[in-house]
Image 1 (cartoon, rainbow, N blue to C red):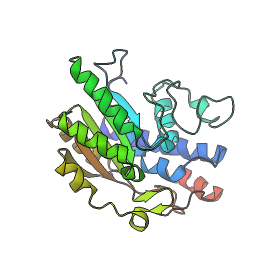
Image 2: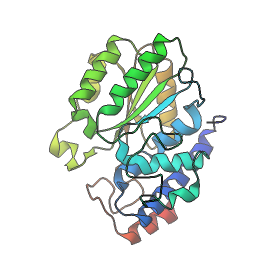
Image 3: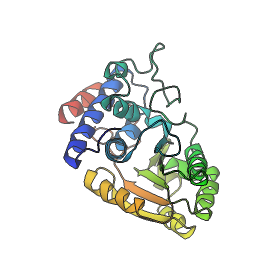
Length: 264
């Protein structure tokens, strides 16, 4: 993905990505705005500092957006990196567009078709094992959501990665405290999850998911670990749109989104 950018540059890129996501919402209000906005800084620092792209599958890095409903943020990051056209963002969800509701592997820069929650980690464990077996230097980054933590498949993959000591695997949980039908506190409290990941053999790091500097320190520490690492990045669902911040509201008003664009 080119030369790593400075943290200041990445903050500016994150602002541009947030603006793109908000504009995509104005084009089609069916996209998952709240979850997309909480993951902006996470994808920005991965894409513009850490991810090493090449055609060599075992010596490049992989990025798996397991919470596929946050696809608009990934699309915006791909556009800012020049992999897809920024003009394509304006057509999101159109029948003729390559950009649909969830990431598909047919889109340049997308490493896994995702959408069914919980599958990204299993796929990531497989890729990380394959890289290890073949002696490659590639790393695998998996971005997950809170709701995915309910899936049994996640727990199976978590224990397997620990057993195989996959130190080339980094999970970042977009910890916004919400899942599809409401807050995690109301549906199934998850405050214990970091302890579970640690007990089964993962390194666990907590950080501020909207601070580029905090994310940078967390990812840097993860890359020096000799075990798989889970970063719990505390975020705000709907970050930037006051009407929906830290709520389960799915569709803010157009005026609220336009105000957010001005402040992005």
